Image (cartoon, rainbow, N blue to C red):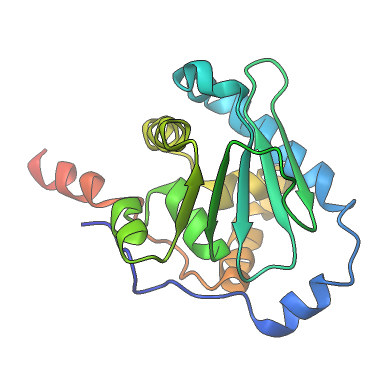
Length: 184
């Protein structure tokens, strides 16, 4: 069974405090690069969303002083960091950054997190489920995607990033992979 609670951690408060005063503009190229990499390596994710590809998803990490707005359009997907979510979003997903990343990479059980209230989902539930299913099928390692642009330094950067967000490196993506290996 995928982990749902053992590593639900928070960004160190000192980093969150410093983040309140740093400009968000330098994050935009990194976010754009990450999304472009996902689009390039996992194009099926945008097709799988169907009509929900035009929706706006607000991702609200409770341990960071900023939020993300994802617009997963097939042609020109966008993700931006903002200080607060705008009113015009279709879905709002709230939880720690480690939990939100765990939802993307499959190391967390989304149902368990939802029912234990470690994440909250508001708005268009059909769109939220479509996003979750598309991400699950794509098998995205968000930490690896976010540092891929560093080339040979990306493994070191991934370990550092996982340490910052409070996740142990090398977590298995999900229990299904572990189970399928034992059957093969």
